[in-house]
Length: 79
Image (cartoon, rainbow, N blue to C red; front, side, top):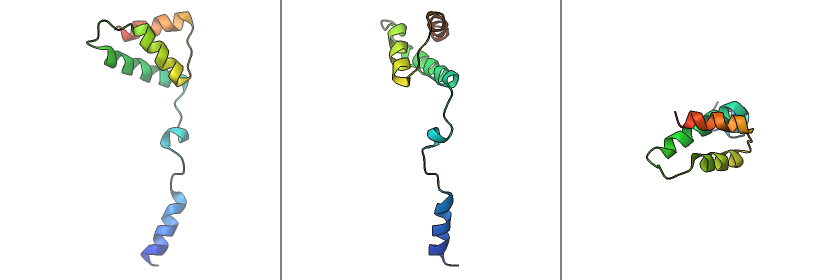
């Protein structure tokens, strides 16, 4: 078999979608990632309101939290 034929068969198993689409994160995993990234980004930025930053990132990710969940998430950011 020639290399050209092998290349044609190798493409049969090629990934057709981005990896994130194949293994989507659940809401808890997304929230954990957003909290970790927000905590890292806010270090050294004392004048920034973490609630506003977190709220925007949650909106961008299509997530919403109850007031209690938001308070818990903010507490995790401030750890």
